[in-house]
Image (cartoon, rainbow, N blue to C red; front, side, top):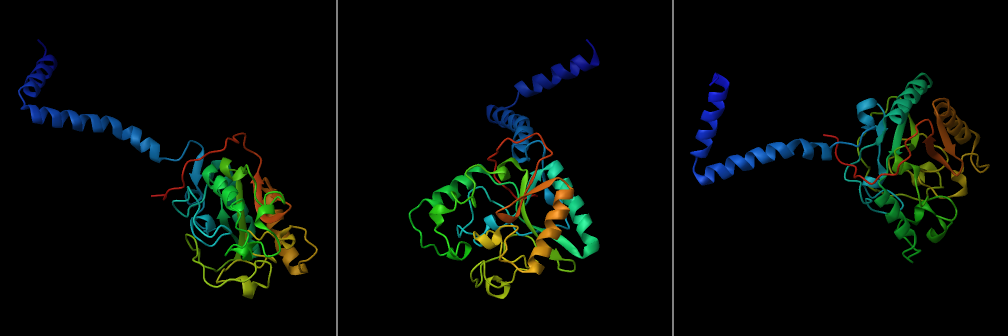
Length: 273
């Protein structure tokens, strides 16, 4: 009998000689060790998705749907962390936009990236709950929330859920990046002057706030100033050069069309670490 075979026999004899409780314990530990890789796999992002912070940590993040500073007034289902997740090519393209804007003294700030489909469903339920006088009326000052889907401001099926759409704006270089959603302070109409709608936001004035469901939010709105139009053009031009198409009703919304994977997902947004 070889030394290897004898060692295996000896180990088996020792295992069989263990008390029953110890055998059960050893078996349980071995089973958990086998399950560990599978559990770890479940906590990772799906293949092809990344945290934007791992691609470009200099891009500011203010993920609005992970807090209460949004048109629903509370964190949406699936937003367990204020992190931007995207398909890898989309995140890499944003990194290129960030580099292009820097010489002009600007940087990006993202408001929303990948959006679980359960969050889209929650938006639909909110819009149709029959309570038109919402405490978040500042986001749709001249509209009924029941009309927001029909008007094209909220999509029943969103490219965000495929990880190919992003909502963002610009900040001026020199502003320190912040992480997570800002808490609500005192806000006015999203379509009003920036000092009234602000609440401490550090973004460039684009003529309206983010998620402002109003005609002034249309990218080419004639109701905004020349300076607002110049800022929107600066952002849209840089984004277009790197594969992003703007949505005409929302100056902040861009979709990246250079990826074939458009499957809508529903995995939760969890902390990066």
